[in-house]
Structure formats: C-alpha cells, structure tokens
Length: 365
Image 1: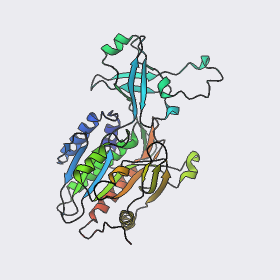
Image 2 (image 1 turned 180 degrees about the vertical axis):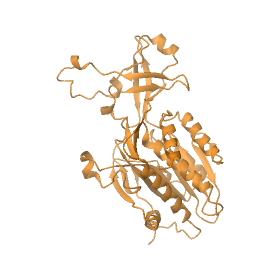
Image 3 (image 1 turned 30 degrees about the vertical axis):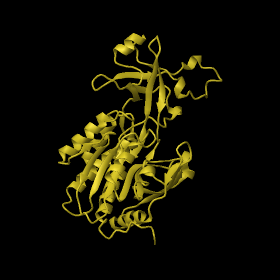
C-alpha cells in the first residue's frame, strides 16, 4: 500500500478540527497540496478549494469531502473546575463515558481531559445499564478550580474532540479518531495529485475540502454556489454491514472495495437525501468494470451527506456519493481498510477522465 496515503491519513487523524474550527486541518491539507505543486485557496466559510483546469467544453466537476469532525463545545465551567459541554454533531452517547478528550485552545496549548465515569463500586443497579447523555457529562482536566481552567485558556465555546488516536490493525486496516472523514481527505489529496499530473486532458475539476458537514451540512453548499459545477462527486464513508449487528443493513464489506450510494435518506431531523444521477451511476459502474474492480452498492435510510444540498444548486447538479466501507461510525475509534481507499482513488481518477464534451447531463434513458 502506498506509504503516502497512510502517512497523510495518520497526520490528518492526529490533527483536531471540530466543525467550525477546521483551520489546523485546512493548513495541513494546503501544505500537502502545495508540496505537490497544487495551488489552493480558502473561501469565507473555510473551505479549501483547488481548481485544476481542463477542457472548457466538458462539464465541470466538483469532487469534495469534509474536513471537520464531531465533538463538543464547552458550555459551563464549574467552580471546582469540572467542565460541562454541549454535543456537536451526531456524537454517539453510548461511546462517551471514560473517553479521553482534547480541549482545543490552540496549537501547542491544547488541554487534555477525560469524560468522567461514575466509579463502578458506587454504581447502583438502576444506573448500571443507563447511558449518560451529553448534557450530563463532566470533563475533568485535573486543574481543580474554574480559575485554573480559565488560566489554561479554556472558556465557554472552546471546542472539544476525542483525543486523537491512530491504531494499526491487521493487514491494511486501521482504526482511529475521525476516520470519518479524514480518510476521505487523504484520498482526495491523492486524487488531486493524480489529476494535477494528467496534462491538459479531462474536464475542469474543483477539488474541495469542505467545512461544517457534521454541523448540518453547511460548507460544501457555499463552495458549490460559487463554483457552479455541472457534476458533483462526494466522498464519505459507507456503513459497513459485514458484522453481526448490521448484517441486515446491506452488503457493504470492509476490504471489499469502494462503493456507490444508490439511495440515501436521513429520516431524523434533517429530512434530505440523494438519489444519484443515472449517468453518474453508469459512469462509475462502467469505469469499475474497465478496471476489473469490484464496486459495492449501498441503499440506506439514516445516513446523509452534504451532497443532499449541493445537488440543488443552480439548475441542478448531476450528483453521486462514492465512498469507502467503514465500521463503528461516529464512535471514538472508527475503522477502515487502506486498500479500499486506494481503490477508490483509482476509480475516481479513471471515472473523471471519461467525462468529456459529449457527457450527457440530462436524465432521459
């Protein structure tokens, strides 16, 4: 497996970036792009955008993934120095207790802490199987007083994320913090490198690393409104269903190669989703067949990406979600297979190369 993809993924996972506070991640991505001779810019929202010129007569493409991660914001510091927080994004409250966290004060000044868990010896039978919700948790930084915590730089509104971890598992499998969607970022950096070296062939491609996806899908929409792409390709996780707890949810297998989504809908809160453009489905199916590559398929309720809003920009954007299988979504240690990421990079680059002036954006058969 190419060492650069692994290195990029490690560095991205180890860099904190709660929604609305993605600047450190953006800085790292821009550095990696610059090292490959790729110019980038940052818009007012904080999205990182690199535009790679191509055939102006072909449909333009926006390929994107999100930089941010879920976590918490400090809402109150108690007199004894313990900290209360509000949940930001789809935090799994079942996974919170006793986790290590980082209070993001600034590079070189971040404050470590732990989410407190009631001592087992004092836990009553009624409490034993109860999940504590985010408004009730307390974070201990060890400071002992409100003044000491504030002197360390922690204030109301300070971002809090799970402490960054990168765990090497068997083979090419890795687990870690915010694999969703730092794995997508690592893959998109690799895609940008490949596209920048293709010469003058292919369509114009806007590579976008978006912000605030975990905070109600905000950043990519702003980028799309500015770039006005004809085609949008979104990269994110696809929920692996190859474990006993999810066996009835589909056929997405870790290590089985990249996937495309044929249907997504978020039935809770944000009522939105994506039914992909048929020409884009055909493009990726045909490309995978040419490459002799397995292409997995997903159709899920309960998942959502920012493509849901991007597809509605202007006169409509021909859209598709592609992705990599991932286990343990929105927990503290999500898991992916680097082989799936590498195959997804190859698939995306080859598919984009097949988008020419005659690519039909209408939906008729």
